[in-house]
Length: 437
Image (cartoon, rainbow, N blue to C red; front, side, top):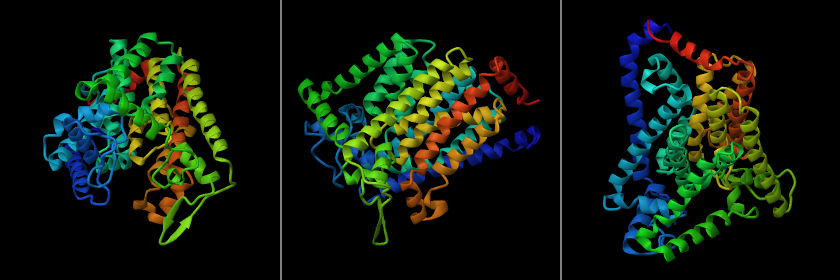
C-alpha cells in the first residue's frame, strides 16, 4: 500500500482499532463474569484481598469456585483498593487496566528500541509494526483477558525497569525485582544483568524483591507475611514434582510438562471419553527433573552467551535484542506455564517485526523462523484446527517450539546485524524514509 493511501485511510484504521480493542476487552470481561466452571484469577485476587482485610488466611480459604490463592502475598496486598468494589466492577476495571498496560508496554519498549519518542515515529511505521505485533500475540492476549491474569502487570513492571535503565539503574532494578516477587517468571533477567556485571541493577533487583516481600507486612504483620511466603514456596515452587500426572496436562506448556508427556508414561489429555499419551520411553521422575534442570541451564547459558557475544554491538542488538531474547525465554523458565503467560512474547515479537518491516534484516532464515514461530504458537489453536488436533499438537510441544523459533530468530538477527556496523544509522534512515511526504 502506498503512503498516500495509508494516510487517507488512517481515520478508518483508528476507528477499526478502537472497535477491535473494545470488543477484545468486552469479550474477556463477559467471559470472566459468566465463567461458572472455575471462576477467574480476578476473582481469586479479589477474594484474597478481602481475606487479608478481614485478617483471615489468604492461602487456605478458597473462593466460592474452590480456587486457592497461589501467589506471594504482595499481589493480594496491591489488590486491596479493589476489594471494596463489586466483583463485576473489579473485572471491568482490571481488564481495562490490563489492556492499557499492555499498550503502554508495547509503546515504551518500541520507543526505547528506536531511541525516539513513540509518537515522533512515522505513523505508518508505528501502526504497521504494532498491528503485526498485536496479530502475532493476539491468542495470548485474548486468553489473558479471559481469565484476568497478572502477567501483563508483571510485563509492564519489567518493561518499566528496562526503559529506565539509562536514567537510573537502581530504580530500574527495583521495578524488575518487584515483577519477580509478583510472578517469578521474570527471573531470567537476573542472568542477563549478572552476565553484564551491572551491580547497580542487581542491587536494585535485590532491593525490589525485599520491598515486595516486606510490603504485605503492613497489613498482616511480619510473622504472617513470612508464613504466606513459606506456603507459596512449599506449594508452588516445590509442588510441581515430575511424577505429578496433573502437571503434564494440556494446560501446562512448560519444559517439565513436555518432558513428562514424553517420558512419564501417563495420559496427557482426554477427548470424547478416550485418553491419549505421548510416551516415547518411560524414565524415572528424578531423571526427568535432571533433564529439566539441564535444559533450563541451557536457557540461562544462551542468555549469558548472547550478552557476551554481542556486548560490543550497537544498542539495538546488544541491549534491546538481548531484552527481547530474555522475554522470549521467560515463559519457558517455569515448571508451570499457561497460554496466557505468553504475553511476555509481545516485546520479542515487536523486536522482530521492527527488524523485518524496516528491512534491517532481510535474511531468509530469520524470516522463516519468525513465520514458524507464529504458525507453531498461534495457528495450532482450536479456532483453526479444531479441539482434538489442537490438543494433539500442543501435547507434542508445538507451542513451546514456537517460542524457541522466536528465540532462534533473535539470535539469527543478531548474527546478521553484527555484520553491519552502521546499523544504528540504517535504523534511523529506514524510519525517516517511511515518514510522510
